Image 1 (cartoon, rainbow, N blue to C red):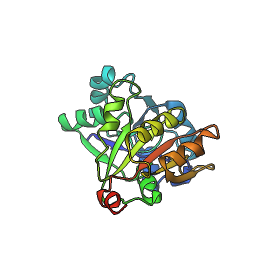
Image 2: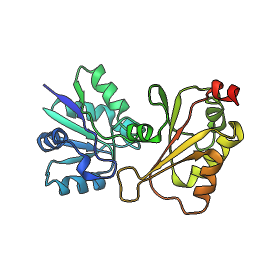
Image 3: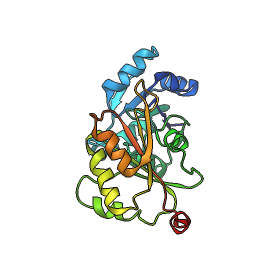
Image 4: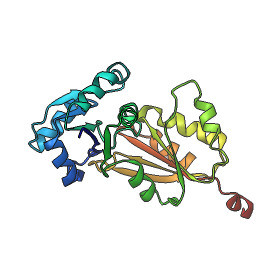
Amino acid sequence: MARLIIVPTPIGNLNDITLRALNVLKEADYILAEDTRKTAFLLKHFEITSKLTPFHKFNEHKSLERTLNNIASSNMVALVSDAGTPGISDPGYLLIKGCIDNDIETECLPGATAIIPAIVNSGFSSEKFIFEGFLPHKKGRQKRIEGIKEEPRTIIYYESPHRLIKTLTQLLDLLEQDRQVCVCREITKIHEEFFRGTISETITHFSKKQVKGEIVLVLEGNNPKKTDSE
């Protein structure tokens, strides 16, 4: 029976891949990869020789029907993104939905994602949180930021290093001065950094250096009781 298996891959440290993920990548008829060059590096490291086929945001609409037909005629196909779990701010959603709509079995392995270590190590409440993904570059950006002003749950964003200061400045203009934030940078990598402080303190910290690497921004939720007590 045809199956699509969604396989999380390490977000930095290659040792974070699971044994089950390695077995699937070895046994798959072929692997659908967001960037075949990056995935080839991962496969070479673990001595896996499975065939790679590109599947990314630039071709997923155009190639969806053909890809579904290929999966249907295969035994097991693996889907990976450049890092983390496919479908989380990465290609994958359309293909997974297409498989479900066409009665192709799907399975998602547990594994690496930047969201969970970011919120757990931020020190903010992880009982309830929302994930906002990447903010729009231009249109709708301000509206999206304004929409979280009264949000009581912890808020998580993905952000690029060259837009970090811009995002923090927009948050500072909208929110109370003592709202806490944690910038999680290069999670699991050599230069991993978790900087915690008020938004203004965070702007000062990252304005003094060139910001590099993958970033998860964790924002404390609105706490009316905290404001009232002050």
